[in-house]
Length: 434
Image (cartoon, rainbow, N blue to C red; front, side, top):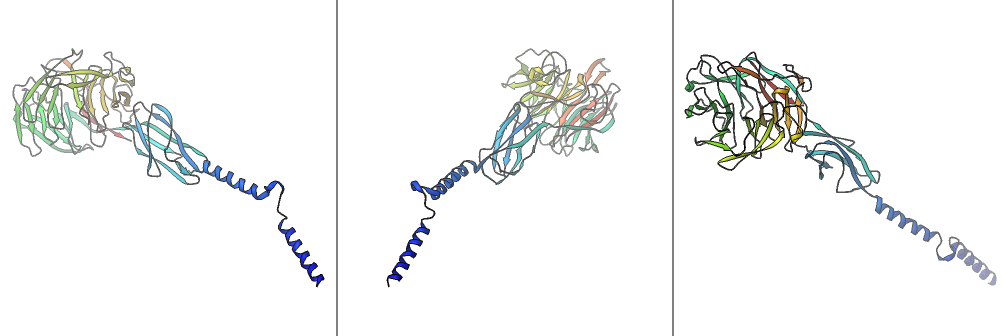
């Protein structure tokens, strides 16, 4: 019996020794060390498990902004001048995927994303690159060898209207598709016959009613159904350019008498005086999508403000001195800014006759060159190699030099240019955004 008791005691002592083999001194041992390591790992994961997606933007011009989207929902709007950095407000779990795309493009630039997709495997992803550049254009001649023309307008379907001179015939407007295919001829029989039927101030209202000023200084109109009417007779007349606002009011500029005339959609004609002494006559007028008016005057583009009885002007781009330079506001220069038109984003496009170029002005006054080599010509192709004429023609009745060039923009952003040469030949050019 004692022998069995000794064996049991020995077994119990052996089991106790085995159980205590992993014990250490000081009350800590490896178990405590394992607990500290886990907590440390947890703290480390708590710090590094969330990743911020960041990147750089290059080439964003003054006043422009681009909106970026990460994974279809997290957005970040960047407003910059030149280069800058950005980061998305929402952090991602480490190891998750990211995909950065452009949500909204700038007003007058195009931005692209590189290194925009991948996995967030580092503390902060600093590799997304957003590059912004100006829109480029390709120039093509869609109609050539026309008789001398003056007026240019585009309807709501992007059809192109031009007023063409045909001696001994009533006023005529040719209507072309956006690709230069002749659709129809519109004849203003109520204009009578003229030896030299010059049609000025061609424009189209939101209902696609066509307006012109005939040589007898009458304001004529024609609906799309062909119904003709004479709004005003014995108008001061021979207005070079015209435009319609969204309410159907027609504004004439470059006329004799007051610098600006307005024909309301009810048929009431009002002449507006200027509160400022203009160094040069107003030669064209346009309105942006916000309702701001802009005019060309000599070598400047002016912003126009009406108070109901008179208008004030303030310089928007260019200076009184002729020249050529891109830049912001008065830092830029033009040489005989002949015609101006606005697109549906608020950009202005100017036919810079003396520089043989088409220029663009952003809503923030940044002037860039869209097309033109700086030498007179009719070459098609990329904007940087295309050429344009000066549009200076001698009026045979007065022997004075006038400009018959026009610029307009359709709803797709194509720039339409009507240019006339000294040979009394006109062509329609289209600048297509790439």
